[in-house]
Image (cartoon, rainbow, N blue to C red):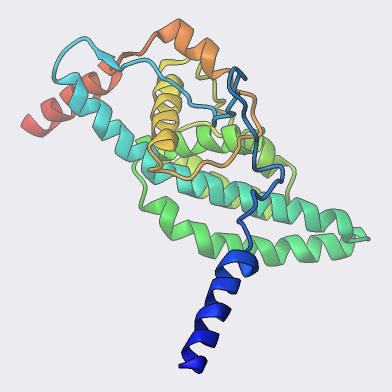
Length: 237
């Protein structure tokens, strides 16, 4: 009996005196608010894009067709940008023209092996988009990029891109004034928000707000409708 009384006294003492009250952890993550205070909460910035507007219902199909082309070309532009950044960074550390030429030759073979088959699997539209996206991501046109490297690398680019896609390596990216470039940028911006593509910050300055203030979400795909119309006529002959 005395033992039970002793246990009871110990438990009462623990509950009455031994328990510590939880304290509020004060740090930069916690704010004490009093009644009447104004609470300011910092939220992540949310980009709101205008709703896409189509002239004809069937234009939606051409837009999504073009979207697939952009989705295929964009990862290659990102990869090319990363490889060129790595190449240029390492060249700055290499002393002597002979060593630099030797390093460029090694990288040239590596890049040719990495890109050749992939570039040849692209359509003309995808290749044209890629050349424009290279300008977007690197801040330089494909022509300017190859001009800075050796002649062998220049020949590779001309043979596998310009001749293959019948286009100029000097093509620039102007989404504020060129319709196709606007379509590319519109698709990219929506894909970034929807997390369908991983965004890499472009080296080319792009005024997205100005672009949308000009186009206001209107989608013009007449160029591709005419292209497919010509293809159908050729096939019917």
